Length: 418
Ligand code: LLP
Image (cartoon, rainbow, N blue to C red; front, side):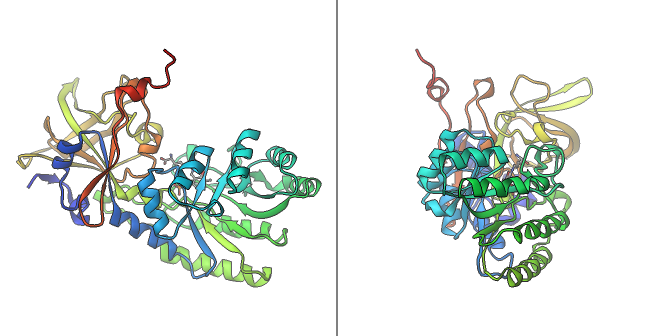
């Protein structure tokens, strides 16, 4: 048995018929490994969130846009949002129909609006000036807009995407302007959307913002949809038994608000939510290898191939990811110690886990970074001209399948003009 410290992945049988050491030998490291069964069950959790028939879950592929994962999400009956022409393109490749895609634009040029219009997807704008730009190029067209209710929520100020200190959405006092431009360009307002921030573990702010968007919606007749946004959190501290977000309580309260709204509005319009993290985070574990250990002035460093080009969240947001340890010969560690797990990037800030108490780690060990399925690969880069990792899917039958190859040196140089 080569699982040394792996309660979370073992309990979920995360690696199916394989094990992390075998996977790292077969595919190399760093390696993103995803579990299909977990992904499917998270899709189902959110599809069942509310008791209202015209309800759709739009997956946010910014969290993870791997084509094979998108196909799984689609087969579960979810739809998608898109932040860019690139996301529209990949969503379509995964089989989503144009009407199943909502382009939530933010500071885009006419070319991007034209791309989205030609693609036939639904479009939301993020400011009065962008509404006007859209009106000029597509008079008489359909459009939605993103509201900023004046308050937000999120695990870090960088991902609190509504409120008085963010670039997002149209503030309440600008709504008369929106109405004027809709009229001027004969635009049909089909929806309003919001996204107040990423990662909440209690539903309070989400419910409050829902109440808010519903009261705005009443000012517009004949909407086709209201999109409440994403942000549903997952417990990143599973090794410390962190509780899950209580979807039942949140779902019941949301259902109540929606049913009341619909009976007053007189039309069973579509309600959407827009989760990214909740759907994919827990279906991913990032594997890396330990190449060096050392003491440097009283700090024990564990040197790995898990640089922040592979997973940037700890560096960018001080995010916590639980770490597991897998060892080929299975010999248990006899002591625990505080370690700083670092990568191979040329910056002191290249730390994946800071001063963590863990069983002793040795060279050649494989480390698993839990809950890295969301905003992991999608935020990876070629910084330091490093290769972005490969991705493997543990399929429903337990067998692994490569779903994205590792970059090659040719990928690094392919855009040079030689
Ligand atoms: N909809 C919109 C318009 C968004 O901007 C976002 C995320 C989502 C939906 C999905 O949010 P989620 O359900 O995943 O929380 N890189 C950060 C998170 C950035 C989220 C940005 N917007 C992280 O790693 O924590």
